[in-house]
Image 1 (cartoon, rainbow, N blue to C red):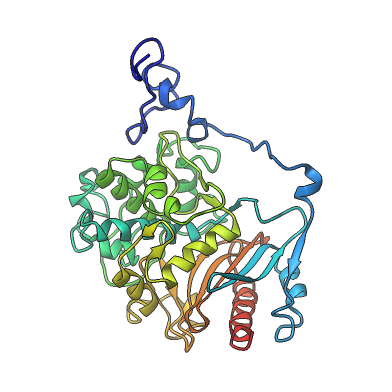
Image 2 (cartoon, helix red, strand yellow; image 1 turned 30 degrees about the vertical axis):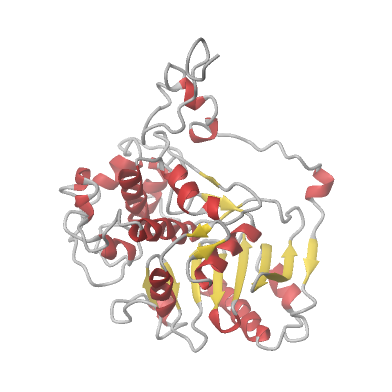
Amino acid sequence: MTAGTGPHPARFAGAPAGEPSLATWQDPPYNRWAFANMGELTHTATVSRRSPEARTAAAVRLDALLPAVPDLLRRLEETCTDAFLVLRGTDVLAEYYGPGFGPDDLHLLMSVSKSLCSTVVGALVGRGLIDPRRPVTAYVPELAGSVYDGPSVQQLLDMEISIDYDENYIDPASEVQAHDRSAGWRPRLAGDAPDTYAFLAGLRGSGRTGEFQYCSANTDVLGWIVERVTGLRYAEALSAHLWSKLDADRDATITVDSTGFGFANGGVSATARDLARVGRMILDGGSAPGGRVVPEEWTRAVLAGGSQEAMTYAGFTDEFPSGSYTRQWWCTGNERGNVSAIGIHGQNLWLDPMTDSVIVKLSVWPDPDTPEWNAKQTSILLDVSRALDAA
């Protein structure tokens, strides 16, 4: 029988962004896609290929670092670490997994996901599909009249847009919690936007540019732009332009809202080893085993850092006075040139160009983001970086 004919037509490879919905996924032709992609439509649970006993076997291999950081194991345990990995060149120099967690386990990356999204944007810039100088609405006209009507894609990447958006993770009245609700991360309340697209289009503010304001909504707008210029759902674009090129051990996952839109700002889950491959690609000038991901000039711009004048967030500059933010990466501006992707509750992808190393730390802090937890995390990352000088 010829493919695409008869009673079993070929399954179309990708559904348009926003289709199908919970209301239409069981109807033809959408069921041809939906039955193979249920994780994008409803909650799913993993049926592990490994026994519970195997999953709870902790792994520790820190010998190379302990002479210089003798209390490392204690500090990893005290900072609620699920996974810790040091990749120097292409060699795994050190690795730790907490009880119940292992090398094959996926871990929520929270806002480390933002740096993955910006990498996809960088790939599309390299292909000439996105011009960072153009206004956001040139790619997503549905945002006309919103706070994004005027700012450029580059200002979106660098989070230099003034928005009425409170990034207070524990305040139910904050915009970030409303954003979570639109994405299906929290129970919906009366008056909430029905999905992420509608939430983003409803954001307001002065739109003034040139000063840093951390805002998770910016990343989802980048994801919307990615969908628009590629014709792919965000999850598919993340695969096509990044994950499929890393020689990853495992598929990543991403949470999606009721329309199937991927939660680009915080919803990716991946293994520590595969996340380290992202850092390796940046240090390798944008190249990965599967080919070029982003232009070399993109990675140089990330490692060089952004505008120090624009960075006004004391929570970062208190630790790193020369710090900046660019292309959804935190740039310390310190003598080592450390650059980091950071997520709340202790997620970190840390680049140490001086030793050509990548450090991954995935954690479950009891608090989302406090100076005390951040200081402990930064101290570990810096101490390990310095230990690598002699390792």
